[in-house]
Amino acid sequence: MISVLLDMLFIVLIASAAGSAVYWGAVTVEIWRTQRLLPTARDGIALSELEPPTQRVCVIVPCHNEAGNIATLIGSLKEQDYDRLRVVLALDRCTDDTLGVARSAIGDDPRFEIIEITACPEEWAGKVHAAHSGYTQSEHAQSSEVLIFTDADTWLDPACVRACVALLNERGLDFLSLLSTLNAQTWFERIVQPITAFELARQFPLLRVNCKGKRRRAFANGQFMVFSNKAYAAIDGHAGVKGAILEDIAFSQRIKRFEYGGGLLLADNMLKCRMYDTWEEYVRGWKRIYTESANREIKRLRRYASRTPMLCVVLPLSCVLLILLSILADKPLAWIGTWAGSIGLIAWIVGMGSVYRMSRAPMCDLPGAIVGALLTGRLFKAAADDLKSGTPTEWGGKSYVRQAEES
Image (tube, rainbow, N blue to C red):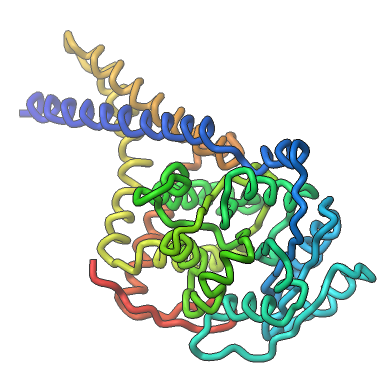
């Protein structure tokens, strides 16, 4: 009886190893194709030198209680090497010293202006209204040919604006967003963040986001969005997405619907961001992102909650167990298990390593991917539970109760 059970386990583990080889092999190939076919923001530097962009650009930054971050962003904006640049800081109902820190960081730089917002209409999301106010209350913003909306917790390479405008021109786009290079300082940024970001990228593959026609998948990163003023006005700007909790996806959907060209590229260290300071903020923020990206579908969130640990934890651990059993087994064909387990495990290591390299995550943290996947699965589950129970989302100084959608 024990021998039969071991034979059955052996077969199951070989199937798991085969699944690991196929899945993680496909992940590696997809990442290789993405890197080969798509430029990064850094490639825009060379483009800007071949054909220097000339459009007037305005960067608009919605800020809510960003006293701890705003000076870093302002410093990076002051160092931009693009000479046709203006910056609007839209301070939204700040109760900390964001204004004082911003004024001190700006100094006497005439390219900056500050707009203070004291209230947010009930039908508007806070960040969306702040960005809208920054645009509508600034003559420089309305007269600029290119608009860039970026978050207060980002840092831009000195050539970032120049490179992105060059990419917008070269690729014939009206909308371009960057996937920022995320900082890795805390334990959750090092262990969990690479997996949570990978899970989002798997739902919205870059090659699909950047293709044309009906196959194009609408997605963007609200930390950094570049618009031609023409397209921004045509889709009604932030007024067209005023109630969206995840305005970046809403914008990308409208860009697609209005048949404007849109793209999403890797920042490649040209744009850096530290999204959350504490684990509690990380959980709250990613639950919001996952819920909206899943169209508020509880079944989809629960499916992702099971899929992530299965692919990132169960498959590689099954390969390890298969290798051990094959080494210990006294069977003529045990070598098949050793080879199958080794191939499946190597595929996971190479595939996950490709994920880490693409996201610029430290390779030394790769073993932590097992724990990161388990915690990411719990994030999906928590998002589904909150949606089912009607737990409100706190974001940008407002509270939102989201209704679940039918799957």
